Figure 1 (cartoon, rainbow, N blue to C red):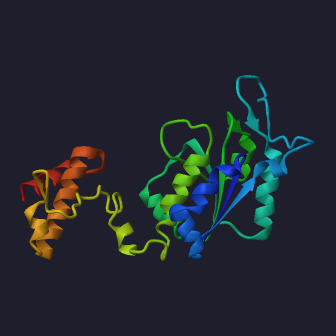
Figure 2 (tube, helix red, strand yellow):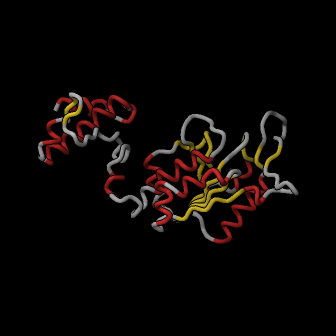
Figure 3 (cartoon, rainbow, N blue to C red):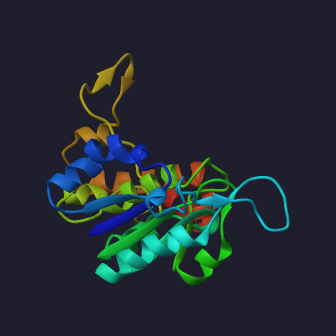
Length: 234
């Protein structure tokens, strides 16, 4: 996979792309991530990328010329499966969306900044608008990192144990179950006996039931409550 990120503060990504999962994935050759400085396509002596909004009001708006120039240059070099704009009013990002994006080949991620971007950018260039929650941040860089981390970890070969990603929360529509490791007893708190039994079928049943109960308690909006109640009575 190749991901091209467009930002007014490209240095924001340096540490994350060098270390951690994204850095590992890059060194393994599973993903190429290229960060482009929007100011390189800016206007005039000072490489301006923003201006005041028509009609007045507070804040600045990213001009269309630099964004069009950057994305059209990228599109002239290769075909992209999606041009993503990170925005609070986009579609809520979730695990099924991450799964779908992980199967694509080339992505552009546009990070917003200032008050807004010129609407013509969204109408003409952007093919997907994604939100990471009902909140506003100073820019799209943090959401872009979140999206890349969630997507790249699903690419085959990135994680040492590929099965681990398949059992994460939300992959089956549920939160994940509880996990324990050594010691079996710590400060009076003991690991559930079934996990020490070595009985794989019973352990799997316990994990399924625990995941259902955990989801019911923490995220009941994900569940059909009648199904949960039946499961808890088993």
